[in-house]
Amino acid sequence: MIKDEMLIRMIEEASKSLAQVDGYQNCNQLVPSYNALLQAAKANHPNDPCLGALERLNKEEDDVSAMVLRVLLGQMRIALESLQGAQAAPMSPSSPER
Image 1 (cartoon, helix red, strand yellow):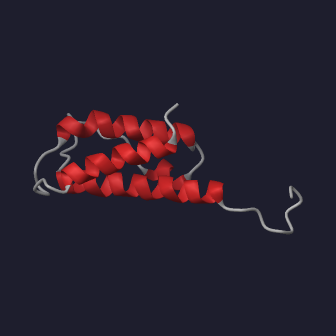
Image 2: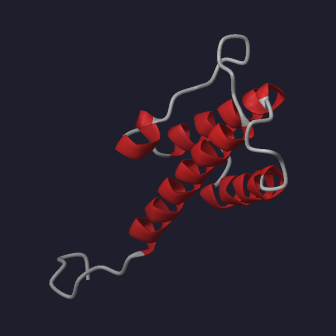
């Protein structure tokens, strides 16, 4: 299992590279990598509604532009970061586990 921290690093690296690409350029060759990242994120958080709303891409059927891929990677990164924050949030003083 790939930890969320590693997934976020991989997404950030891909996003940096995509920032330099014309938004309308076809990026279908990156679809397998996106799908692998998404699969790992969903495996880590199977019940998360934000990650659950993101769908796998099909490089034969979908016309995936750099702009679309930047948006999808950004959504995945934000969802993973918010989940990390939720896991790291301190328990309230009235919590019975304390």
